[in-house]
Structures are given as C-alpha cells and as structure tokens.
Length: 118
Image (cartoon, rainbow, N blue to C red; front, side):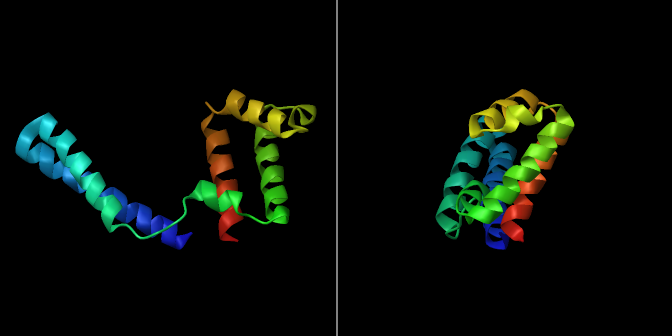
C-alpha cells in the first residue's frame, strides 16, 4: 500500500507540475498541454504498482468477507436494511443508493484501506 501511495503521489506531481508550468507560460491552453505532457512524463517515470481496487480484488477470502461486513455496516448506518444486503447485487444497489452521502463514501474508503493495510 505504501508503494501505491508513493507512486500515485509521484505520478500526480508530474501531472500537476506540468499543468502549472504550462498555464504559467501559455495560459489556459498551456495548462491543458502542460497537464497532458506532465501526465505522460509521470506515467513514464512511475514505478510498477497496483491501485487500491486491484489490491482489494487480490485479498484472500477471509479478508474479503471482513471487508464486506464492514461495508454492510456502513450501509446499514446510512439506512439500508439487512435483507437488502444479502447478495452482491443488493450491496451494489445500496452502494449506488447511498453513494451521495459523504459518511458512506468515507466509511467504505476506510474499510477498503483498512482491509489492504492490515
């Protein structure tokens, strides 16, 4: 997880730096071009790493189950009923339903990060 964070930050700094330099030199169009060039340079300079989604998909079964329980708990606090969370489709529907709530997004994010770092 540390590699993912470090590599993501490094890659985004290239993109942001390119956009800043480009906009300083050429205004809005320069910012666009600088952002694109910075993104390409960041991609070429980045280390090989897995994003958070891939890390979650690679979890062993017990950790996946723990993650699902934590996500279900977050959704129930938001208002979902236990019977609505009995299947993967039900959980997906409730995630869509409550995704506009910041507390749900934060809770799901924390559960995902916790599952791949512990």
